[in-house]
Length: 435
Image 1 (cartoon, rainbow, N blue to C red):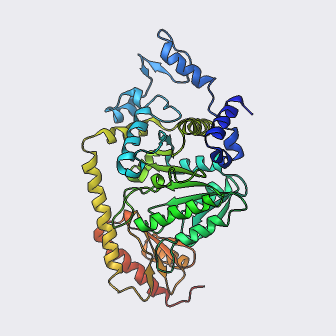
Image 2 (cartoon, rainbow, N blue to C red; image 1 turned 30 degrees about the vertical axis):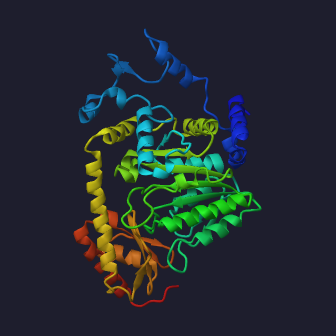
Image 3 (spheres, helix red, strand yellow; image 1 turned 135 degrees about the horizontal axis):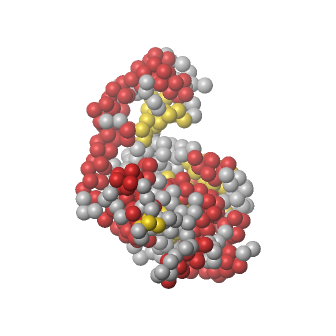
């Protein structure tokens, strides 16, 4: 094992032994190189005042070399803020700004031991880092039965984890904290579990309320008290899009300092929060650990980044930083939030009219981009294909009964026509029993 990896492991083992036990074999072996091209280039950048012939970029007239056809479309930005490599952990000013934003929007994080957010190539990359560092063959990844399908690829296919499902809703159509607890406690023989909490949920658009949030935290604490090391990951992809009386912040803060066997990891980003899907700017933040452990986990995370993408895109990080620093940012973001809330409210009003009750009911939703219909008379995939072929309408079939509808991408004035057409599609197919 590399001496740097060994030293990081010693630090984590001393400061937070249960966190060390959570690391995968790869997580224990990874490190960020202190010697080599990056470290020597950083030293040269600080000291080489005459000629710096270290890193693989090109300069011209003291600035990063660039093409005019590209710079003409980016003339508002200094070439040094878009063409140079971003550091592996991300643009420092952006990390600082995102940390401040995160604390402001999540009061439960105030006063907690909080790492500096590390920039990722959006949220999937952040989750992939979690998988690499903490998941190995046979480890249990606990997620609800209604989940983002990429979890299977990220944790299951890539890392060989066992996906453990529990029903998202209980019999009262509220979050099934008891099911979560049972799924976690079932991992006692393994002594470890990775739990992913995705609120607002994709695909249902559901976020628990405060009482449900407390029950989630209690379930995780009970698992820890039973001797299970829990890697608690909050996938906050749709953070901030809370339209009703639900939790208004991430559970990452409540999970910090919960128990020595619980590691809280917050994965979020500008992707959906700031409506910049193609920018691919996300963050991973470790919460509630001793400072030395936070620093060691950051080094290991940078090692994963260095070994995979080397560093994230600099231009999009600059663009996001520019937005966060703009005095117009809060007002513009509120305007978009109001549009999204209006669409969600319109969908709920349409579905609550009673007109469609004979053919579907909908799963509770109060946030995010999506909602899900539970079809009563037709197969979801059959309906999806029929809607696409006959009406040119795209939806997502999930299993035999569930149809996901993204109201985020439909203008409010078009929502009634959308659901009327879905209803017509069901009628076209007739009352065919679900298989």
